[in-house]
Length: 195
Image (cartoon, rainbow, N blue to C red; front, side):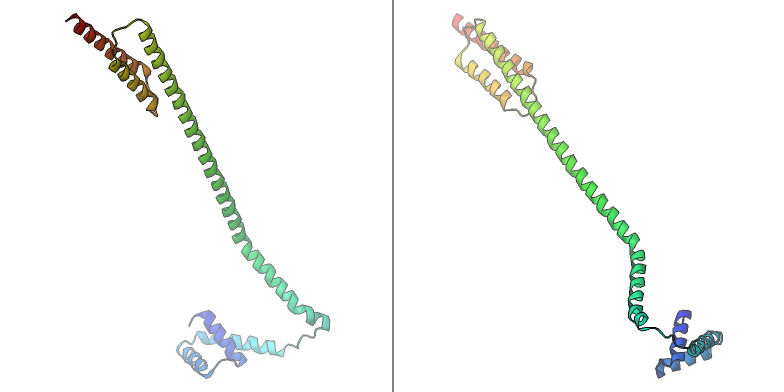
């Protein structure tokens, strides 16, 4: 039996509220542990001294407010004990609110960055198509009459390939390839006409 349990059992024994089975266990414990007898006797003496005190006489007003004052003091004590827990909850709520706001801001920044990158790629692609078209037109205006229809179709396909790409292209390589194709085909046509 631990000391607080011994104290409670001794107090119940002194007040006469201990049942027979529990009283037998207490007496058995006291017989086996003589050092516990001092605690048991001290509780009995304190209880007898309390019985000798005169009863407190309260006025009618005090008796009505007595329970209320006890309740108020209990509520104050509970409030004091729960204040640190409420403070922790407030800080958790503030932390989660700030974290949520930061996550939303990050989403907005990522969305704006993706939109900017996409619009930049679209502008680059449009510029590459415009450059390729103007270079092809310059090439055709230069007077290459020996260009066949299927070569022009190949060049148009190359330009369409540029416009279908979603990433930034280097227009010079595509135009150079198209011009080389035109030059080779023009040479082939010239050779065929010579034969």
